[in-house]
Image (cartoon, rainbow, N blue to C red; front, side, top):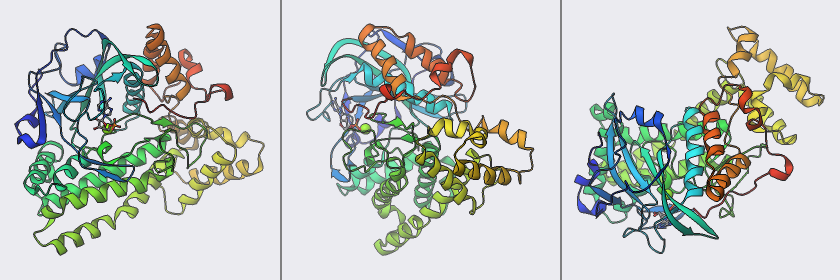
Length: 461
Ligand code: AMP
Ligand code: MG
């Protein structure tokens, strides 16, 4: 049963109250039955009569914007699953709000389907993400560089509160609101922390851990978010805002797909330092809650952030080590991992298949790949399990199906231009089991041919 959103009980400075719009007249173009089950839904009613656009600020490409907010989205309800966890429902593309600035408040079907495809694969890969419960057609045209069919994304998140939500109140000197927000995050996302001595520091540390975990998972699958602005960084540690994101094919640490990221600020390998930057911004907003003494609060934040690199490196090492089949990665394994990445780059190998087909590296004729392979085989020989077991287990760590850009674009084109949703549904079927080889989907495993390559993902969302 859909509940009214708890957020709507907060002070009025947190949102704009909107007239409830009924969405039942919009045809459902896609319905995510698996997610509906997880949410405990018994019917298709996903909105309540209480609807709000949430206020937030944010740093976009490093520049502070004091007011952003839900310019084309609204919070319309929430669900409680069988384990008592709350999930919010947002409608994205549902029309203008007071936060729309010059925007039209709308979303294109193209962008909504892209988000559906990429986020469902992320979810199946075990990566925390916002999800799409449904795609609704609006029947209206949306003007970007071209005309596109309009759509509404019914988006599910544990919470839509962002680093930018804290910035909104911090920049207005509203410490009372920061406390309300922090208490809500503790209760909703981290209830186990409420017994800690300094609960707000514990909250910050927990968010830091979740975000480190998230970015490490992105790096492990070759995911480039593309717009890691502070308003696109959720306190819950879920991936949000699939605008110009992409999974890279040939490995290149400085790879960028976004056509607006001219400096490469959000390139693949810069994501760790950017998340630290975003966490620093969050920490600064929380300073008044860390301690009444400003000096002490600053010291607490600096001490905590000083742990970032060690925590990140440990997670990176164990995660990338797992991709090579190492039961327990040691710091000396970093060289083995880095050397493999350098070889992937040198030979412009596909990141996903390079790991998936690790055991085939030995058959390569290139001398350096063969030499690397001998070192690798000797290292996994130290595992407790047999070599065969290690190689088998790799297929549960290294996926076969990722949302390759050319496939995603072709599927979106068929839906948006020819009203043919079969390619989208076929990709979703393959993404349900991204680790499992299947004769039905052989063509979906392959990298783009040179003429199919997509070098930039659109930003006109
Ligand atoms: P995004 O780039 O999607 O993270 O959005 C950044 C800010 O721009 C947010 O405040 C959005 O609500 C707003 N925005 C993006 N697209 C539109 C649009 N078409 N209409 C109104 N606001 C928008
Ligand atoms: Mg955003």
